[in-house]
Length: 406
Image (cartoon, rainbow, N blue to C red; front, side, top):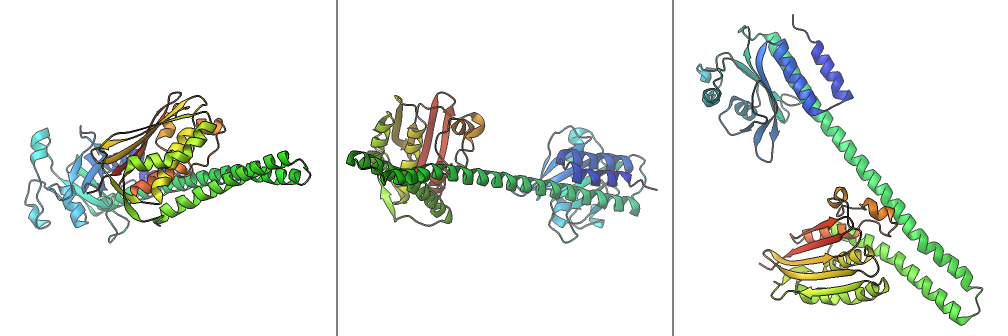
């Protein structure tokens, strides 16, 4: 009588620690032990490449096997048919088992291994469900024929493999949702803190204004209140811009744009901010840059966000270099600062919604983490790309590539 205890042990582990590699190995090891088999493999479907990719292959030297689903392997045939295959003699006439079924002996010839018998089970939720993989066991050591109990046990192992995969996917989804919730909570907190500062200042200055008789002092307070109100409006506008680009809404018409001229125009209002922060803003454009097709409303937002970011994270007395040059695919805008730089672990995430690098948060630099996200979302709508290069303490370069006109 077969021992079913390993099934319960693996099932328990799925809910306690659903590490796929560990679970698949335990399934393969238990199947070979209980059924006295020489080899066992667990393959998962790679839908992108239309291949079966081994997650564990006991008794084989290869670290990873990739079998085309439209290929001649028994596992691939099982994947196409979606049914289990019991093969008592791999070198026999397999057309008696299933029409078109053939064993490819080339692997045996290459490795010197002799495949005698095998059972291949599809991994899926139900008989009619979508296939996610294949479980394969080869060569019963005792050369005993496969009986119904053995097949039932293998079906249970295949079901466990499916449960392990789905459990790991659910855990990954939960972790992604928790991460998103955490980022959104941080964003809300950042936004409230950012708005609370100027809002409190406006309220406080308004109270003071009511008691001040000196015109010069009153004018100073009014100017300060106006700036604080503008800061709040700018944050709200940034949120609306991100919302519009994510929804696919246009900000203007799609027009032909000469990037060198457009960047120069957009830098004019940023020059005042740079001077206020004691930053030297330098611009250079290469000749012969191809014109691009872009949303007339979003192009200014893209340029402004990248340059404004560089100014905000730069130290007084430093420089920000803005350049437009030719690229094989179109026009490339590059903005380089001499600021604090971005740690490597944060660099891949700075274009994500609500994300802020740890050193920027610690330095208490104002921001809510949506400017660069808006840039990437906008340029991707026109098949462009945005990326960054950085070294902590040496500054950052942000590149924006917009494809040229076809």
